[in-house]
Length: 441
Image (tube, rainbow, N blue to C red; front, side, top):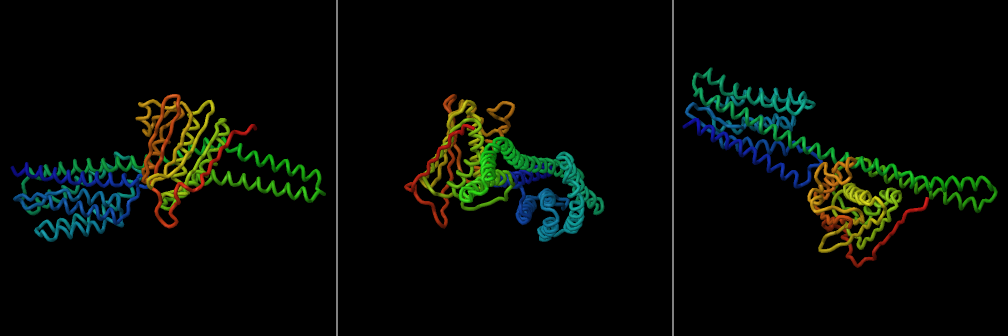
């Protein structure tokens, strides 16, 4: 009977640990921290300490006087992910929460806390570059060693204990450590993959745009070359040459601005939370995507009916817009029109991007945003729209996609209006409408 109580108590302890870890990860993802996997040391310490206190509160004490619980698991996890800034404080906490219960186990707790703090600090840097399987097995071996050193050896020295209870505790602690550590490592690996996928997709977009960038740079350079030749042919005409040189300088400035826009988009940026002017970011994104539209013979139109701002990262918004616009351009193989329309309604800013391309079926729409689902055949990875969905969610926005085969696709983005200093005006402000058609050269 006692052994069934021990097993039940330990499994309940494991269930509580798993629930807390999963809830924290859901919270982590819902706040869109998927793009930066680093967690502050204080947060790791508080979470690990909370789990240790819960484990001690759920401990099972049999007649042999030993306390059976899984508090070593949060201690181990805190040490692995918190390092030397967290682990010593976790050792102090482990001892502090055990002292009020007193008994011979206090001495064992002190010895184990000090010993395994040293062991984890020694092994942690060696595990960083190891495979996931090696890391999990190593942490599981530490847990097995803890169960032997903290129960089996003290029981032999003191000369009491129930021999059957120890194998049950060792099996549950070791198995639980393997399961929890494997879960944490898998979640961490997925987060890293998503972080890398965003960077990969961004650089893939840059590589495609780079091919069309030559068009925007070649035009002003050709103009400058022609003006220099005219100046060289008639160097005595100061008035005309001055006008030509001014135009040449302005063309060079335009080429420099185009190059800077591409470099700014390609360059990695820190996480930001600031006021973002929607009109400015749409115009910047439009200028970046323009050469690709011209190259494909596609007309690009933009109609912005407001001057409102949203809160978030301007680099993320730019990446969202460029990814969606690029998908729209690639859906129109034989030319067409890409329309951008932005307005505000009910405290939200809406950005609508519409193409006249091949469209999608209901089944394809359902899978939109999944990794490796793409309409581009072998050339697509599906990471572009997955990135868009994640970035939109991170800026507390929503995304809705409407599409019909051979009728085109509309992507509707919405974000809360920024309510800070200099709140945006209403839709009664003058609209801005631009239309760019492909040049003939």
